[in-house]
Length: 85
Image 1 (cartoon, rainbow, N blue to C red):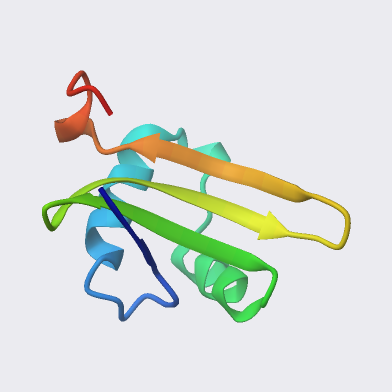
Image 2: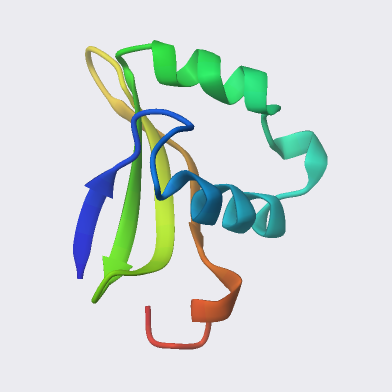
């Protein structure tokens, strides 16, 4: 399994992330695309995608603060669920 950073909405992994994000969280727990762009602009925010042989499996969105790390969103893509991930 590989981990790749998604740095902005132009990343080739962004569409797979966004699809899994929308499928995994209710609307009131999700950002708008504009708010996601604002998060990308903050150096403390990180979005990592998990891949298995190049196939998108899931993601973790987290913040790196001075004294702790905060996991904001974590999900497995719907098509990869129940697959041992």
